[in-house]
Length: 372
Ligand SMILES: *Cc1c(COP(=O)(O)O)cnc(C)c1O
Figure (tube, rainbow, N blue to C red):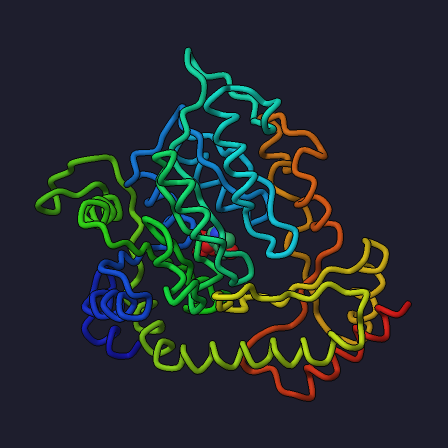
């Protein structure tokens, strides 16, 4: 950071280029376009994909609001697709149904949003798959469906940087991968930041242009409508330092997750603990557990709170039931799995520097209150 203060190139300084090269190596992609946040990464990806009004973008209702918000920001319509009950990620089987429902404009096939388009029904254009809590989605199934239907596959890897799917790194699993450097994410900076990853020359060039006001060949030449969505050079400097220990931190998080499982699994058969499908590596952005029901969850959360142990509920309310999306006309029970899981889920402390004693203390407290 001192080096940046000295050279003073706060906007697009040399650290940005260095960071983007290192992220390409980490994720295993040809291009990294750093940007101002994970939300802007998603907006940029949708803009680069030419997504706009009248387009349907399929996504999960069980994610942070920004995933769907980005779809709305480009004028497209989110079509929510319920999740898999074990991974909490978008269900490929439901996705196939939802695409067919949009194509046939028939919500008897799958619940669809209210859409009062000018003259035509929604046109299926893209999927945003979210690697929730750090666990990559079922990309073999998702990319087959996306390819069969000519849809752009965007990976929301805001929580999964450091995770992997069948030997490929999270961030590299769709046509474009979007991540966030918000401080609480696996690779966090000291403010807001994000990046888009891609192997496509055309998309990379568009993303670079969109990041700086739709810039063309030179600064005051504008080819398209874009954004001001650059990453600060100071944040790039922070990220470069944190990248040096990123692998080690990832490994530590995986060990912490293993310890939680070894302690809780034999002691608490009434809890559903996260398990990692074969071929996947989770970045363990969160360690999230399902209680049997809301009462049991409340009992555990209150009990832990009394012992000074923080918990969080990701996510209390699935997106199709958020007030902001009231206009889409989704009803309760339209996404039954996401609704059920949001009533039972809670997350416990998870970070690389959790010591063994704390993990034991948290686990013992959960055991006490899970028994009732
Ligand atoms: C955090 C997050 C985002 C948004 O990232 P910001 O950097 O906060 O804008 C988007 N999607 C998911 C799944 C996230 O967890």
